[in-house]
Amino acid sequence: ATSEFHIYSLEWDAQFVKIFVDGELIHSVVNSAAIPFNHDFFIILNVAMGGNFGGEIDPNVTSATMEIDYVRVYQ
Image 1: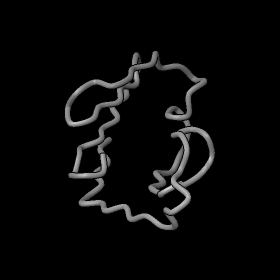
Image 2: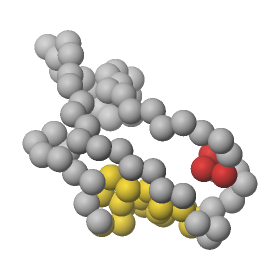
Image 3: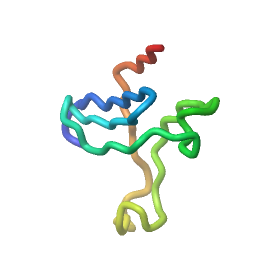
Image 4: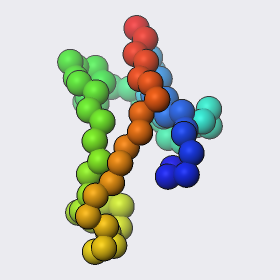
């Protein structure tokens, strides 16, 4: 994820929500009223550092850069 551009996709319909990276299905969930994609939402892109979700952060890292080539939204 850090050495080249990738295509991240999220597709949802009445039955499933599917997450892809470079065209490969990574995760799928059954669609229901309990998941946020069936309500109004925003797309937020950020570089979050810290916490315990992705593992330890090297203490020498004090900043990072996120490069976005494009964002597309289809309905």
